[in-house]
Length: 264
Ligand code: LHQ
Image (cartoon, rainbow, N blue to C red):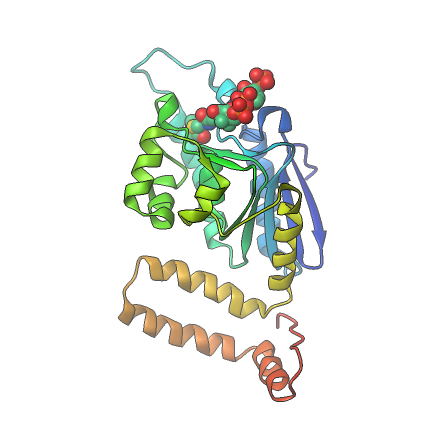
């Protein structure tokens, strides 16, 4: 599938996906959803893709739903189709990012608003540029947080902050985002993508099975209990221990050299 609304670039096990509607601050339209879904599906299947980086072209990360594409709303009280839009495009996107057993890093180069914030939250690690800003935006236009924000935002910043940010839609600076745990790192604007790709490269050279299973287990742990997770970890550890990478990791430790993982 040829892409117009996104750009993709692969290097050394890292797939970088750039949302590419800079004139609309990379707001979502159906074609962008379709292309992103296709790229993520391919990345899931492609063993050579170890880590993903998602970023935005131009000055924005993503401004959420393209509001101009919602112009033909019916009169108030009539069905709008938004429920179906969410169920068929946004929800599968968020679930796909979570289910993918590969790290996904958001390189947040500029504003992340509405479902663009949700997209960032659904990524595993967030690296923001100094000039990046965040806004829930949903309630400002009379909507509720969607695309996972009611679940993900309280998990990341705590319920009190999540409600405040959702109710006020106030703009959060990159520095505040760092302080409240909304992002992992803040770097100079021009370093956002390089830093994300460097971290991605480091993870891509890691033990792929262990890294993928770690993601699965950590997210499961958020909605589980200690006893269940102890048992679950034991099963995953057995799977990790059966890999060649574990043998290589042990050998490298004993030989006092860096490991050369193959992902097998
Ligand atoms: C946009 C957008 C945009 C179109 C900027 N759409 N053009 C909702 C409904 C249905 C189903 C699924 O889910 C959702 C979830 C949502 O995502 S709801 C929330 C949608 N997003 C927003 O409400 C954000 C709207 N945008 C803004 O508040 C501002 O543009 C932000 C804070 C993102 C950036 O502000 P500025 O840096 O001052 O830029 P700007 O406002 O001047 O925007 C630049 C251009 O981008 C401008 O176009 P123009 O032709 O006038 O130059 C905007 O209209 C366009 N743009 N966001 N979401």
